[in-house]
Amino acid sequence: MKTSLVIMAAGMGSRYGGGIKQLAVAGPSGEIIMDYSIYDAKRAGFDKVVFVIRRDLEKDFREIIGNRIEKVIETEYVFQELENIPAGYTVPEGRTKPWGTGHAILSCAQVVKEPFAIINADDFYGKGGFKNVHDYLVNTPADANTEDMCLAGYILENTLSENGAVSRGLCKADKDGFLQDVVETSGIRWDNGKIVSDINDKLSPDTLVSMNMWGLRASFLEKLGAGFYDFLDGVKNGENPLKAEYMIPTFIGSMIKEERARVKVLPTYDKWFGVTFKEDLPSVQQSVLELINKGEYPENLMEAMKK
Image (cartoon, rainbow, N blue to C red):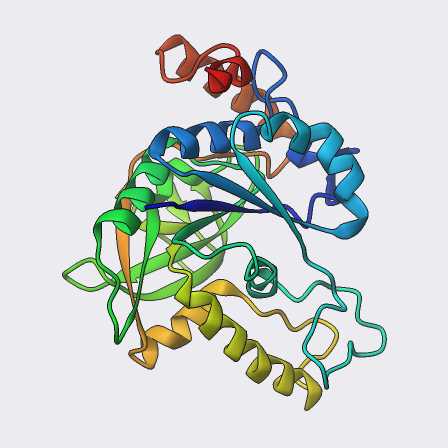
């Protein structure tokens, strides 16, 4: 069964400390974090990569990233544009903020006809999440009545930064491991040997959290598209027209509550890396080197992928 990896990279203009964080060099041969995600996805069994980018970034993206990746895996490009909304709707005056991750994934509807995973462009997920999600999509039969999907659940203490507080989606699952809710929680940090947040004075280190690695079916795109009309109706009626976002976790959460979907949470024990702060980069580079020294990754990733 063919499977695709969708990488949300439309926000690659975001800058941190004077540079574009998604292009920060993480590996010894010039690899960026995204290269490791594609390597892990390919060896997990994914057959195609779909980049969600902005139209104005296409030329630079292809030159810096796409042209390399096209040599090692089937590659598609789709574009998330603010003006890409259904007929009968208009962009509110003064709106510049993108429509969110749900809108980004809708951009893939014409090129994704198979089960697919979605990830952020700037997160180092580790091989376990890709393997878990791929195997679930391939080996779990689709349900005719309920949208069946999965989510890689990372261990909270494996996703924290040493350089500041982070926001995480804390997963609430039932006894069978099916997601009930994702509670967006901000200000998560280490404090005197315990993990706290803005609203919790102590969080369990082994709490499962979402890092936005979802496994979905092609049928999900049709439902996501229908939901976008409802979202835009809300915007049209004045519900925060300049900042409202159509977000994947929010939409999936509503499907769960309406019993239209079930999401299997797949515990994932790899350490997540990310360049949330510019001070994170040296530790990310050191962590990658340690994984290379353990034999988890080759020293030259792109050459290894060509074989």
